[in-house]
Length: 244
Image (cartoon, rainbow, N blue to C red; front, side, top):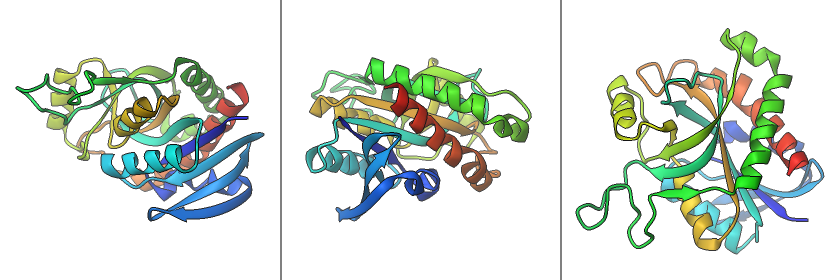
């Protein structure tokens, strides 16, 4: 049975997931705590990466090189920048891009030098299972819609990453103008995608939309993490593992 790596940037995003791991043992390595055990009948290793692309890349490399993870699922929250993406929706990545990568004129803007890629792929089959898991989790968590005052949807598309928290209308508009098909923005996923691509390891990325990446991005963020993102993340993982 494959070992699935489960990564989130913050402790709050793993708050519901870690206690659900059966027979968990914790192994410290590289300043991180890796939780190994079983979840939904699958062997897993779960870890908080820390925030930002470097922290995420270090964590992904440890998972693949030392813990021998067979596939990786990154979960957590993100800002919505797609026009149809609302707070409470879920975005499952079809590809990931570093919006702050710019080595021009030596290389095209957004292309990671010496890779020939700006958009790093995900594993289609694993991502399909995660999308089905997200739909099932949203259907189960009616309190999410009640809390937010609207129904929540699953979207598939481009997620972009960068080493800054996008939190103004101007930044959000600029990203939409530059990358009109981007649905969500966060700070880790594209770095993990680059590492997984280098190792040839299947990847899926799923993000709950906590804000619209604008001037209200900080409002009730803690409450959203506690009441929506953490329990929803656990449910998504459980359904995705059962479907994968």
